Image 1: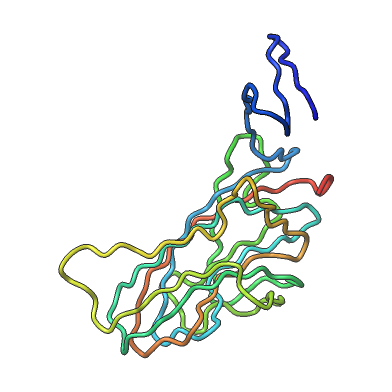
Image 2: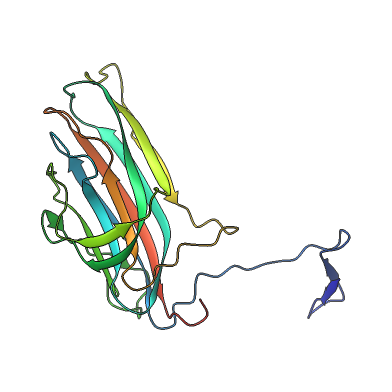
Length: 223
């Protein structure tokens, strides 16, 4: 049993034993050690005939520092009637062997730096998303290896006719939510993340996808 005594009082806190005076904890963000914390939000479309497994959004660590994604939110709104009703999903994978960043049908967003004095955006990270208006093939040109299964999935029933009786809310997923009791994804050099479309869509289709990403670039020491 460990016992902690307050520096400014005689109160004791027993750790791992009987109920006792509570601990007052002040949490701090990850220490960036002269590197930085960053955040970006993007929007792109799913196009007519969107291909199965087409790449929509990627993050790649290009250097020897580590990248810890702390938040990855996905919102998905159907914006056009589809040729036929279909069940689709946006699947999120970890990538390894990510030696070449996608170069075709890409947009390069510029993340915000969370505090003055941190490293310039985007740090040693490549971030790309598919062309804003969408393209059926998705992004291409990159070299990487997907894990055998996604670690997050946002499923959606895409309808033949869109509802018109009232507002329609987007589908939402916290793919990474920085839970304090979970070990985070720690992306080393040439590792990354991918969001891809799961099944081929019809000749008429349309969706808007919003992605919000936060990440920290840290020195590899201690991890």
